[in-house]
Length: 193
Image (cartoon, rainbow, N blue to C red; front, side, top):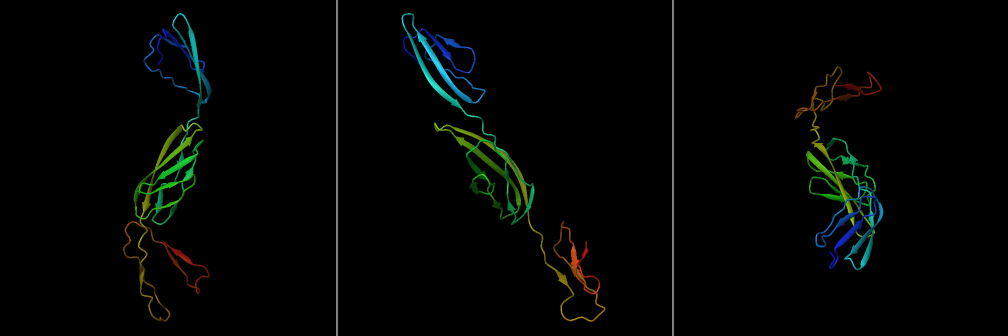
């Protein structure tokens, strides 16, 4: 605000029309649509004298946080999001399990199954200390690994012909595939689904 001015002209330096007012107490705001360096000029007059003030402003391009991640993993797998963020200098990763990482290319291992919301907070700090921030959000599902218990009648020594009986107890919705190696039949394992 200024005291004694009866007319104030503000040139925001971006080609927008002059903002002219006689109100010296109300703050004025202006939105810059394009990144760049601008010189703001404020001309004040009261009919007998003129005064000008200038200030240089730098408007940075926006940070655009973006990443991709596979939608499904198993417990114990390493989650490696692909960071696609433009023009950021710092990164914070909130994994949805209470843990946080930093850096452009983090990795994470979830210890329990469930659905997790991963949040990337990307920012850039300007020379003046100003901060531009954006966030991106993705969801991934961590599945519990299936029970790999095997029950069979293979214990002990057996004479030919021997019929193997095997099962995978605890199977609920998992698909089970068996690899059977019988050197008398084939040199390669046989896949039985």
